[in-house]
Image (tube, rainbow, N blue to C red; front, side, top):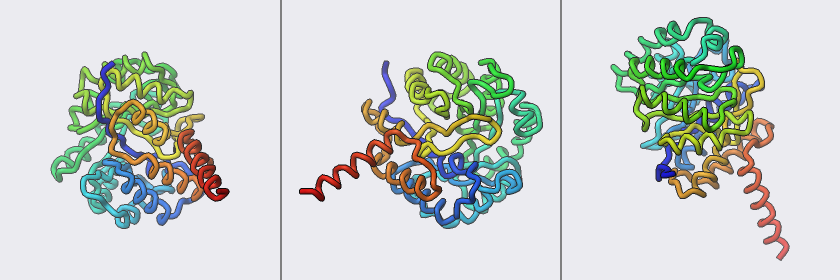
Amino acid sequence: MNHPNYVKIVEVGPRDGLQNEKAMVPADIKVALVDRLTEAGFVNIEAASFVSPKWVPQMADGAEVMARIQRRPGTLYSVLTPNMKGFEGAVAAGADEVVIFGAASEAFSQKNINCSIAESIARFEPVAAAAKEKGIRVRGSISCSLGCPYQGEVPVAAVADVVRRMRDLGCDEIDIADTIGVGTPVRVQEVMRAAASEFALDRLSGHFHDTYGQALSNILASLDVGIQIFHASVAGLGGCPYAKGATGNVATEDVLYMLHGMGVRTGIDLDLVVRAGDFISQAIGRPNNSRVGRALLTKWASTEGAAACV
């Protein structure tokens, strides 16, 4: 298959990756993580969330994080905004892009945000309109696009319907998210093709969780149908508080290793991402969930040890 020669990676670790940590991660650590990722060369980093601290206490320091990060020209710093209050916070913080979210599953929508899919999208109309007025990019994220913890199978037509609704809101980019990681390559291609029938292929992205070990295969399958934007989380951080058993997003290090091995350019320095993954894993006392990260860190340690023995 002809794969794209360049792929955009959206790094979601600082927001999606850290939001479910029980112990509070200090703002200093979050800022340091974003700065390390900026240095590694990402053109889009999901840096914070402007949701109610009652629901996601870990993200209560979003304004402080956004104020303190070292911004690089050409890098978009995105924030999650569930409503107009969140949007106002995002504007004040100088966000380059706001992220709105809906589900392809009615059951998940009801459990997650206590309303129907149609109602959830309607709630974002004022946010999207205000963002357009201010020249801020809008990204729409569609959870449970390949399966739901409550209803199981999610019809492909349901995903296409939400893509259409988000397109009509004026979204610049739309994420097809496998929130519980149940997707497999052929199904992923089917869903991506259906999404592309409603929205520009080059502005669709894949957001895959690795619960069943399918994320890299699903990225490869998406590349084959022309998707060239993917989300990943440094050290494989994250999960979803409303999706039981959902493990983290696919590890950025693993995605980069695969893409670079295929000759696909990303503009990102893998070694610096591995070091960022090691930094955050140690800082929050979590095992590093990136196989590539662990392998390279072990290799570097053994090389350093060998040099010391000479």
